[in-house]
Image 1: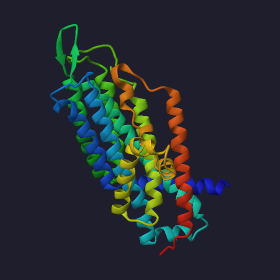
Image 2 (image 1 turned 45 degrees about the horizontal axis):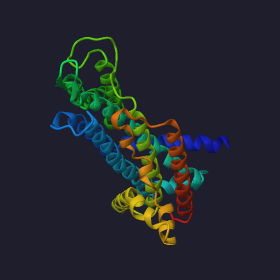
Image 3 (image 1 turned 30 degrees about the horizontal axis):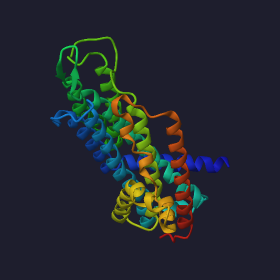
Image 4 (image 1 turned 90 degrees about the vertical axis):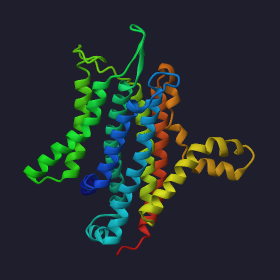
Length: 327
């Protein structure tokens, strides 16, 4: 038992490190952060609640870029290893296929969580930067200083990673990924030292912490997508896997509207409605409108749903992986 736990932790750690060292993961994360940071500076109109458009756009970036990272990480960590013979070499040692497969999922989920932390911090900061109406002065204000720091954070992380790579020969991609997360945390801390006008003020982050549960729900959805992508990558390559993930994403978003209405009259619709993951359980930005919050009980229920669905998909993936021949 102890040996299997050690094998699981070792393989999961190696999977996470290998995925983070892929340039595409760093590029996707950086693109998500920069686009999120540019959103409040480029929007010229407000629709309803102040900051809502920026918040919803940032959460959408979190979801879409996370989908790409989950799909690519799953294919690069399993399908490519199966084709190159790496998986066969590992399984030739006393490592069970079940441990190997589940450890791959754990490593991918860790990468998705690291990406989600960067996306969530970017969302919090972008919402603070968004133009808001200040009743005390009867004017619209934008926290330009925080916006500039948010845009500069990825470039600062890249510069520092380049210096570290030159001095110590540490891998650039993984170093830059870690420094990006550190730089975003630093921006959150520094931004709390001044107000919207750039004046020194007592420490107050002045961010909408109620956005964090919405980011957690999206992270849960990305973990479910990681499980689906890993199961598909047993037999499919990167492009087919990403294509099917997009189809499942769209189908899950419209399942309430299309299949939910037909489930009372069609048995086929009932089966399809139950099998297709309902992403509406994880995409609830409307709950934040006009100061709304997401209850803890809802988070727990969504977490149980995501865990149960992921477990079912992983069981099917393990069965498929058992019957797959290795090169």
